[in-house]
Length: 626
Image 1: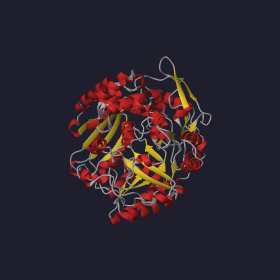
Image 2: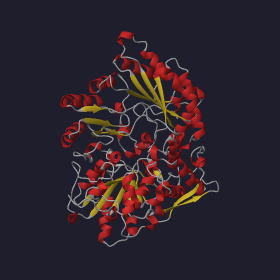
Image 3: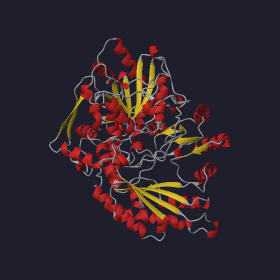
Image 4: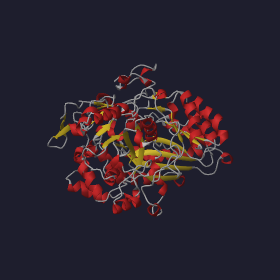
């Protein structure tokens, strides 16, 4: 391996030096003299979080299969090393070669969460790359972004050369080939951006302008370059069993957030929850073939030595071959000491049977996500979960030996009333009561119910993208009201209440539906010391508020303002297949408490048929009457 970018003296003074030395199991090494393109993949958070991200593992494998390309990685330095790099003027470096990022052709940044935006600026500044795209020269890397936050990239548009909107397997080869061709022909940076602007799914912010109305809403969004597209259509990989997936994923030397083999069994979701962005932007649901998954499970375990397999999906219970796959994995690997992890399961007889085989029932807890306390509000959000489902599932679990249940809810959902909020306390108590109907000699000790509430954040491309968000004062009042109602319940001693702080969610709400005016706020907050905003110990709400005030940006304009149907939204230039008309229709069905059946029961004509595959072309019932 090449000489490390950091001296032993520095490595011995920072927390977890293994974050910065690379050389992990299955790390790719290439001869730099034999490649044409150097691409650095970045996850703008600490190493342990970034190494757990499946998307980067897929792209790392995909890029490095190209003989002409070397893909390396970088993560946000922790605060201790950040300070040292600045003091000693050491440029940020890639883990594989330990070379400075500024020497690469591309820096691709995964945009997973709005609260990582200041970390993006940290990566750029420590790499000694100009933060604003307009200030970069011919020798600077091309900065591109991908991931869920690109479905509204406008708050950070000024920092990026272009965005890749959609799933990564489809047009990256075109992007890299265009770069090679441009370089061979002596083309400029702008020449290259004009080439990629013509590729489906690519958005070059500098080729567009925004004009605002007097009330600060968007008047027009228009092209300023003839190579740019009017609409950017998201990229979708329709053949998940015939595309890239890593057989030899990277294995870190230190414990990371998800230290296991991850099998992505499907993409998309049939459920249509009206608050859920992933359920809309990843439509249509597409499954991986069960034979593919069985083969990859074996190959990945062999290549990594991991002792756990996690089945990744938005709703694992909807995978049509789940039973066959899970029983195969248990039979094949449990005797070898390999655990099976099944997140996103609906609690039913099959799920309980599986979990009893792969978990220590006495140590583990079951998780339900009712999201809302009343059936009325669950119908508003189209959760597709009845009180009977929840109570029956809990009772089946109790009879099988479980006595710990986690419940997840949201406060601030559209149309929410005090009765809906009180329903959270009542439902928690009802579940505890179910437990105590079991004869005492058949119980597994006392029951434990943990009810957690998060703050509803409206997201682009959801039916609730027009909805207002509660103010912090409203949220805190609701949280106190709920805490009081929990204390009124018969089984209050068995119920623990956890809640999320309002301030982080408010900022998330601003950036989720924000526009280009916010880039200066993000820049100023970063320069004033904001970093690692998703980490509570480093979150500086007062600094953020000051940055908004100094830029004359009104937070409630972005958060607690109801949008009208006719308003031009900052992300309207993106085509995700799901139409704006469908989302508006679903918004109104929600307000009127109408449930829309899931995609396998009936087609709601959302627009995802345009991708010519997936669940849209399975046989199902009649179309929904709208």
